[in-house]
Image 1 (spheres, rainbow, N blue to C red):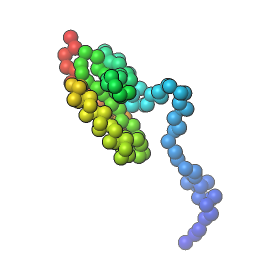
Image 2 (image 1 turned 135 degrees about the vertical axis):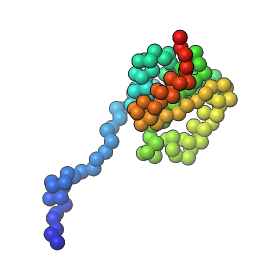
Image 3 (image 1 turned 90 degrees about the horizontal axis):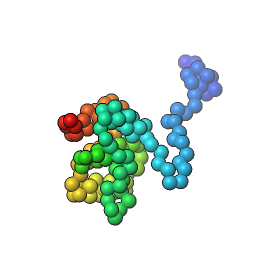
Length: 136
């Protein structure tokens, strides 16, 4: 059995920690659009489905949906950080999301949720298109 140093191992097999790309710094009051939201926006525009981003749907709470399909009571959420232990998957954030989505439903909205992967694969836009139906 042959042993090698850590430095030799890194040289042979690559070293260093592989980390996700860093998000740009947020300017106060400005929302950074996620990859999933950006992709879905492009897909909705391509199909000429009218939408509003960062739609405030509750008059008392500062709740916003990532997307509102105009002319329909459909709210679309692109959930980020589901694999990295992000806000949406931790206890407190998860409970707050349930309260938000339940309130939207009680107000007559249909709330559909997708992961970034589902948006990138095309699944999200296929399902949204089915829900929107004939836009003739």
